[in-house]
Image 1: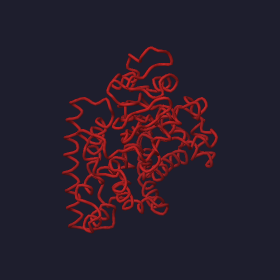
Image 2: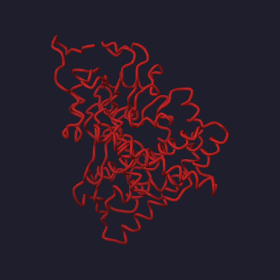
Image 3: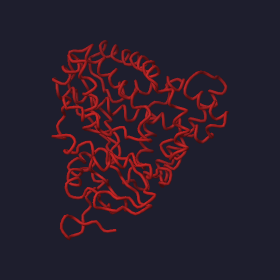
Image 4: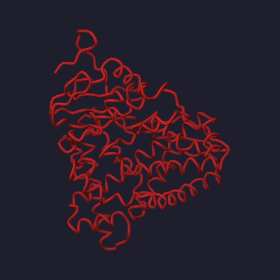
Length: 398
């Protein structure tokens, strides 16, 4: 099927150059052009990119779209997790984990996060007041917390982070053969690491999430592969997206002293600030679905069997929903909470309440202990077409 512009000329240039460094650093101008001119864009790679909020929000909840029938390539083991399954298997796996993210459980894990954050900030106060918060705070404390949820010691933190990133390289549409090989190797490492953790748990049982997965396997509610790769999934989302949320929030506070003051002096504004951090630089830029029947999107009919890239980061900057979308404004009306950073519908992020709580623990702890934060060096990034990633963020606390 050939898509056309508003006039008769076909689209001949690549409007989403996924591997271009400029696109990866700042995709938002590209998204703006798509929304205005080509809201359903047939990419040269063969998928359809959907960029407007109204379309993305509707499609992300559309039960006729499939993730289970997608070809994840080297990341195929994701099909052993609820992220890669349709109902009823998705429902079965989701039910096993839901009780770990109830309000009572989130309160418990938030307290664990608070303890970890306090220990890091104690060290900052005893030192020179400078910390690379990317690994030293955002990663360390979220990783500590997911390990507490699992019921294991927080080991192999940096390796888990690196291997997770390598898997993420193949989840966007711009990957190459070298990245596919890195993904395969990373998944193999994770499988071995996690099988070791499960064996240790069987030898020394406890009351963590891994214990619950083992019990579900023994009861016939999960397969061994589902246990292994669901643990991987929680390792990944337990730090990856939350880390970016926290890092981006701290970076914004360092750039905008008024934001630091608002978070400190207006507790009622804190939820809105976190929602705006999520909206304006969404950690995962897109989700991909497969059409199982002809699907009408605006003026375009997408045939069955086609991949859709639902650009949630573009939807979150659609001016039809968020006026002045490129401006950070935590005082936006209630529509700000309509962002799609955690997805929506059946595959909406199971841990999103915990993610928000963890971010609030970090930001609240900072503003309640220090009078301000400022950059202590240049940040570094490893953005892809799929992931927003801050790798180094030196901050001075005072």
